[in-house]
Image 1: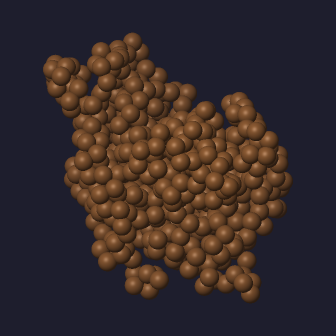
Image 2 (image 1 turned 45 degrees about the vertical axis):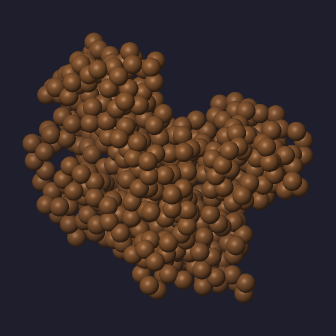
Image 3 (image 1 turned 90 degrees about the vertical axis):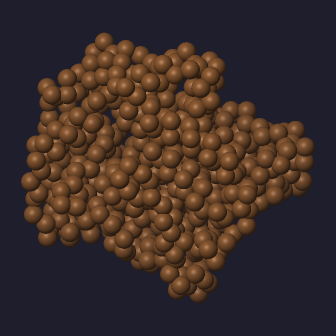
Length: 580
């Protein structure tokens, strides 16, 4: 172990409690373990793959990116940490929204409604992209038979199309680092789940379709998404935005890990199709849900009634909380609904899910769809780093809150994925294959496999649990204030400096968790710093000490970039023509 870890072990118990904010039960350092099967990095096998375009992530965006890049006549490789069509949020692809212009729904009304719902932090060029392409992507899904896919989901149809079009698949492989040369992204490095081996992929262009992330909380099932793409992009100089905005999905308080009871229709047969309705499904998230708890009501009994003034589960006031939204979630009536992992709680017949007591924070650390991620340099899905593109929830385009309505997440990912694949292919055709030095590859391998070579270290599961305890409380992530944010940031910095460099992995499964833990710690820092930086409340970002919106100073995106060893935050004002 290095000197920083020895310092940690020798520190005074009381000082450790003050600095790390860890409970007494954890002071025995249960996460400190020994590795009986340490691997030698110098003897690590490696496999080299050469391609024109590398797609990282095999969900809706990744599938369309791969198909459209292949159509441009280039060699395409798709890498996924799990299985194409079944990883991340792909299994919950159950709705698709299409823009259709009519006498009541014009392009202008769509732009205005979505921009307003996103508090005008919406990248409007991507609204035009959605209006142009959403129906074409839907027709492709119809031609694949994906629309009529059974309750097992649409994933097999995606994988079938990828294989049918001769796209190289690298599955169950975690990509951990992007390779760069002369300021350009020229590939990536990762490892498979089954063996100690490096996968080196040399590419002329890389498209991140790696989704967003969360802090592995119980509740809405986003735990497989761990901010991998944002972390890789940040480390090669890409600008990241939207980290201050947080998702507001909720679950029933009796069983906060159950999602099927509220969103069971995601596992029904067929794809729910919707068209845009001005004002129909857009608007800011129910920030009032957290505010109600913060103003004195019992957090586990936050009434969010759907109407009629009905009291909810013992909430002192019951009924509709201030700032909440009326009506039931997509899918309609609340009923017992089973999905993978078990059955939901019993809900009385005729009772809507929103009439029941709920608990917030089921998506702690997640951002609303397309509200965080790589900030686009232009309308071609490209980052500020040449050779690096992004799409879907890995690209920040949608504003300060989820603003597109039912099905716009999946359809937006399909549209952006298709465009990103096409643009990346066009870029790749102009580029020559870069010669990456063996020294650079060896350095990347050393960084990736360090947890496997360490004889002593901390369990990534334990460090993740400590991080969850810091970040998941609603008064940190949802209702924010300077002193609480700074306290949380001090703890996250301690994890970053003392724990992340000393994680240990006894096998490749642990190695994946170690990499994910480091990614989540970096993104926790991003979220806290961005939340401190934006001194106003806007959309899905609420500051208790700055409760009002401040268009004069903060109608701007917050951009995060790496500046040496520190994190730099800057403002990028919204163009004047997009402000109303």
